[in-house]
Amino acid sequence: MATTDLYAILGVARDASADELKKAYRKLARDLHPDVNPDPATQERFKEITAAYEILSDPEKRQRYDAGGDQMGGFGSFGDIFEAFFGGGMGMGSRGPRGRSRRGADTMVRVTLDLKETAFGATREVSFDTAVICTECAGAGTANGTQPQRCGTCQGRGEVNQVARSFLGQVMTSRPCPRCGGVGTVITDPCVTCGGEGRTAKRRTLTVKIPAGVEHGMRIRLTGEGETGPGGGPNGDLYVEVAERDHDVFERDGDDLHCKVSLPMTAAALGTALTLTTLDGDETLDIRPGTQPGSVLTLRARGVPHLRGIGRGDLHVHVEVRTPTHLDPEQERLLRDLAKVRDEEHPDGQAPNGGLFGRLRDVLGGR
Image (cartoon, rainbow, N blue to C red):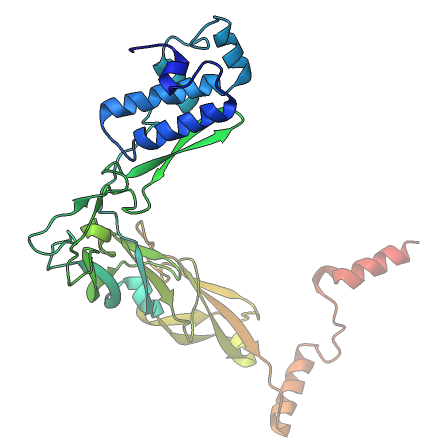
């Protein structure tokens, strides 16, 4: 450094007022700021005037300096001062310009399937509007024979610096360049097809294989089949969401299926055989004599195949028993004869083992 006289660095007299210091610093900063002059030597000069002003603008630090104290305020050099106040020099952790191309957004489409299709898998075509790479400029965004130009606002750095005063003193912050968006370059002659985006809109159709065992709400991920990113960036992903239609007979619970069968009272009492149409075809369901209302009969491995494993869920058949509501005289006579034979003409409604009321009667009778 040519001089360590802080007043000389700012070009002011030693008795300069605070306003004169500020005016001198602002004038130099306008001429030497990196956004105006990116020359490395000029940037070093800017560091010097900033560090000098930081000391002289603080009355306590200026008093120590004028008294012949530590001119650097406890620091070894102007570089140390700058790093202490600004977090590591002019770069401030600068990231530099970023690439113009970015990853595209993910896309989601929905397919509606029947229970049999979700159970055993299916192949479907899906169509969706998306962004694809521009065939005219191959994603560059520029007209043929042209190239992006260096941004005049940030001089190609992709970010601009601002100096603000806080309780800690002057603090320099960086933010993405508002003109180029942090890229460092601008497209002055954009492609006429995509307008500089590097991608265009298109409707795509894909054939999607739906695996066996998927459920309502599940999403199938197709890597790289989403939209193309700006600047011809990599594609996002495509998610195919499964919607399962309600079935007329079966209700799904995970990989298990449930259904109901309704039997007349006589069939439940005497037993019978039913033909039940399952996902695999017709099955014979044996109803044992004396089957009670609410009984559940289970057909093993007649449910939905497991999505990520071997085997299948079960089919649970819930039995409902229909009691006749209208009897002709002959039917009524036969039922009364049956009730007489079974000694059921005057049932007391008592549950097995006495039931709740039987237990209450025992308790009250013991008092």
